[in-house]
Image (tube, rainbow, N blue to C red; front, side, top):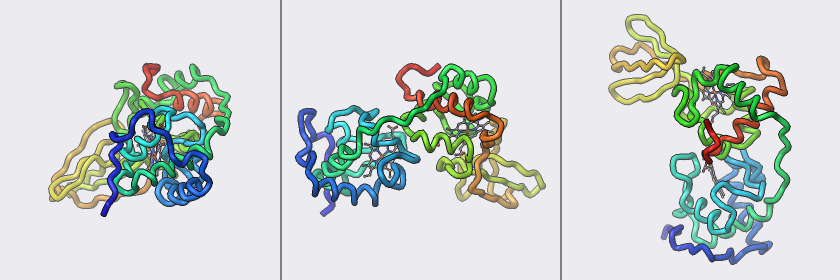
Length: 252
Ligand code: HEC
Ligand code: HEC
């Protein structure tokens, strides 16, 4: 039988029966490596998903809040729910493991948020492709919550080496139509009948399959790398700004 952990059956006052239990922590570590490390890193230090070693969580710091997000996932993000894969003891073991590796000091980032904000909105052209709090463009991913969804290391890589950290669903695609025109952008849809692409000017192109001569998908980003055009200082400023984007009303 498939276990189904109903996160709703966890009460706020519930405590982790395995807290501090060495065997449970080791079991949790093994589960984490298999199921969680692709996004959260081999030691929970973060990657495509957030760093889980900081000792504070966006979902709340109680064991029950951590239990819930593991069992049910976070809607609208890449975080899946695991309540059908593990029973509640399994989820508690994962929580025990996370507690055992948390509390590391947050990585020091000495940048200037105000300058980062300015770089984002005024100098670096980010607005031409991204949205924050409803302002901006749609070709690249919405960054409104990017500070809670991604680790610092991932964000840095996204800026200096965009091809290495492609956001799922935003790879580059080039369509050549039968009348010879060529459009490069991010793929917004593709089915048996049609293909849709958004170019860097935010123009939406839609074709019927019979109009398309070829379609090439590349695992490349439409985003330019900023490792050279920004100084290390400016990159840090921008990263401080990006990590502050957590949807708690401080966005403009
Ligand atoms: C496909 C990628 C992916 C996988 C696999 C994944 N996560 Fe996540 N996880 C995320 C993302 C993205 C978020 C941020 C969600 C948000 O913004 O609310 C997240 C959030 C979390 C949070 C909340 C962090 C916070 O600060 O609130 C916890 C705890 C967590 N994940 C644990 C796990 C565990 C344990 C596993 C394995 C059983 C796992 N995750 C597997 C991507 C993933
Ligand atoms: C020409 C369009 C374009 C410009 C300009 C641009 N980006 Fe991007 N960006 C993208 C696209 C497309 C992606 C998704 C593909 C990828 O992962 O690189 C992306 C991805 C990202 C990501 C990863 C988001 C995630 O959740 O995975 C971050 C962070 C980001 N951009 C920040 C910036 C910042 C900051 C600037 C300005 C310094 C900028 N971008 C300029 C198009 C752009």
